[in-house]
Length: 155
Image (cartoon, rainbow, N blue to C red; front, side):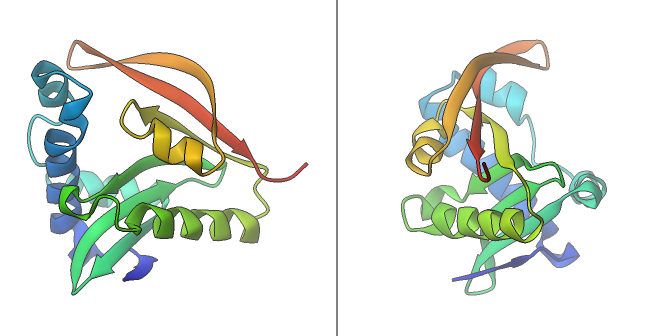
């Protein structure tokens, strides 16, 4: 498995992975109404192209297929962190997190932080993140529970 900086040619795979993961994995912790509000359709690639301008974006690739991706801004905020639903528990998330940690170290970030789904809390906790607070976000007029989590890197 290769973890690398994203390319524009990855965008269709990222779009599909985002939608499929929410509907196949996050649906275990959220209602149908919530996942439909969160990801009502496969995002158009122009959505990602614009969004990615403000992030370090890394993809995990296996046999030329995107099996995971994540975003990190210059302040240490992890926004999206998704692993393909068929690639869960195979080390993809760990490899992506290792890349984020290396970037944080290189850029001398003090902490990493994210708003994490119910589904992702155990993964982040196992990697040293702590829950700071429970949040509620609204997507298309539907409430979703998430958790603010952080990990201090330098003291």
